[in-house]
Image (cartoon, rainbow, N blue to C red; front, side, top):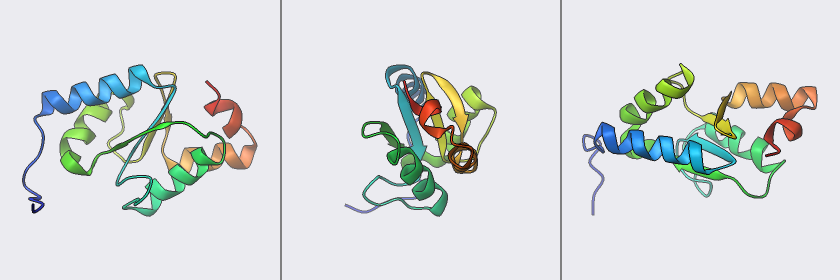
Amino acid sequence: MTFDPNQSLPQEEVDDIVDEAIENNDVVLFMKGTPMMPQCGYSDKALTLIGSQRDEFETVDVLESLDEFRAALERHSGWETIPQTYVDGEFVGGSDVLEQLHEDGDLGATLSA
């Protein structure tokens, strides 16, 4: 099996994945890669910061259909950038916002659902 970078999921399917992940999880991180193999430094940083405060949270790998995930996430947050974190259905931000919350001592409270 080979990876075809030009193959992606239909936009409607990605929209459903995003909507359901945000709706059905207390905390969800949309990231590049997986928890075992993050594929960008910002996703790795977000994963580490969330993991420092929570044992359980959902992750969604956006690399299978990056453009479609960017479009779907922008509908919720107004941002195209990845990673994106949602808590109780609300957009929190990317790794920079998580890092600022951590520095301010507010990350734990933000991520408690």
